[in-house]
Image 1 (cartoon, rainbow, N blue to C red):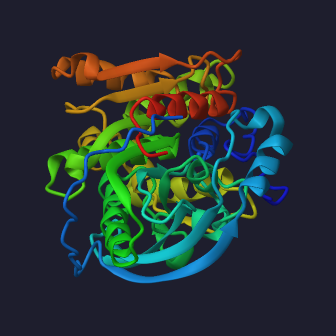
Image 2 (cartoon, rainbow, N blue to C red):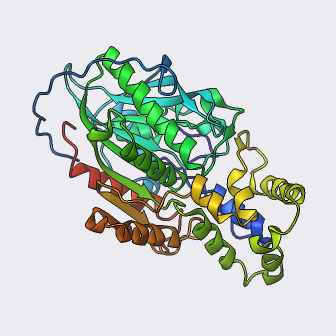
Length: 409
């Protein structure tokens, strides 16, 4: 079971109420973003793909078995969570592994990263679809997927439904703890996922862990952002699993950074209009770089919980405080492109952590590029439809959507 500090199996820890200071609130809300059926008709038999060992980013380095979790243990964890977890029935025990692989950090340097691989225990020769699950913001390394392979871990619960689940820790967690986590930086966020897909595929092939060549990308909050970044990079590249991607379900992600931060800033203007005016990026951009950095460092200290043991790359907030929209577009935004496969956005209208406008702007941008009905936005039905309140509804929506496509569960 999870420690008391992280009691929600498919949700995230509660976030604090709005403080009176503008930017500490803005950072605290954004950094506190949460971090989690199907037909059985067999797919036609296809020839096995050649086993290719990658060198460099995507290279498999090591794997270690973490243990096995029974379906009874998973079911008990779900029952104990009550309304804090979606109603699902585990079908399989799950074997868990920690996989180490090479990826790129924010400076495009190779770095060793880690991930949790959760495999349903099925009959010999049975295949499974693959979910790439992107977790939400975490402040403690112990909560990273490969450090938390327990019965209430989202990746484990999804695997118990019949999916192989790969869950990147991200740079800054797991084996890469101590390195700066590239928070809301699109390129290293995408690399952590795509390089994991490469390494995990190699490991599965070598160990005859059979998949059915169906791939799904899912995640909520920061996980929604990373999911969108990974989808865009996968579509634009030549990754071997590009053709296997079926559908993508990002929930409540800050896909357009400036829209997200501007909306959060507007939320607190009524509470403290003087502070809002003083800390407006349009004002701060006129300060010296060193002074802006000092303000940023102090704000980050206020935003992070006292027991945080991970480091966040400050590039996203530096660009915002400098009012550098070009840099934000170049290194952070993931909203303005045309997906070729179904994207099912999900968001709550009352979200004060990642404002609803982040999804509406994304939907409009994608449809303006001709995406049409390929991209939809579903409103969370919770009352109120806040960030935390919509976590469980998101998981139910996502699993129901995937069930309409997934085979071999």
